[in-house]
Amino acid sequence: MTAATRVPHPYYPLDLVLDNYVPNTNSMKETLTILFSTFGVITVGALVLAHGKRHSTLKGFASQSTFLWFTMCGFIHFFLEGYWGINHANIAADQTVFGQIWKEYSLSDSRYLSNDSFILIMENITAFAWGPLSFYTAWAMYNNKPGRHITQLIVSLGQFYGCVLYYLTTMVEGSPHCDPHPYYYYFYFGFMNIFWMIVPLILLHNSIKTIYRAMKASLAAEAAGTKHKKSK
Image (cartoon, rainbow, N blue to C red):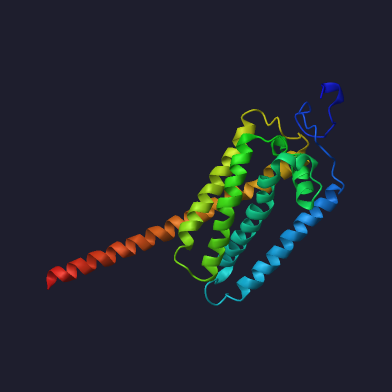
């Protein structure tokens, strides 16, 4: 298809070829309402579950918020990002709810429509590694399993590292894939992703501190046991 007959689209860079692009049938307002309403349902469900454990494994605001975080991450990573990972080649023409959500978000980063190799690898790792591990971490918190901090550390490190690379791989080029309008650049691209840098850093610190204390206590107990044996 020649430049003169290319399918018009609203994405940056403006000369990006998206010959299979089909405009969304839902408006921006409708798309975001569906997305955030779904987030709301997940939030309510997670908080109801957390409330049932408020006197045992999920005491306090921090534990319940962390449980909500990993539950939400599980759904976003595995279902929303997993859908993109499986259907990335046809997202530009996809008129399903998930497809239209991704086309709306792609106004802030057209790499999601152009089969960018970094996005493809990063999103598949996020969806099919961090997604299930996020669900496991939430389950481990709910049931007070000792493996919780191991997976919390792994997932949080992966999320933080992935988000840093996600930002820098386009910003180093001057963000050519982003619509320069402040709404798309600062809200979609900036604000909607920054959580996966801030929260993982907090949780990394929490897990490292917890694992360090556990190892310190274990070594102290082991040393005390050895000393006791020698004294006999």
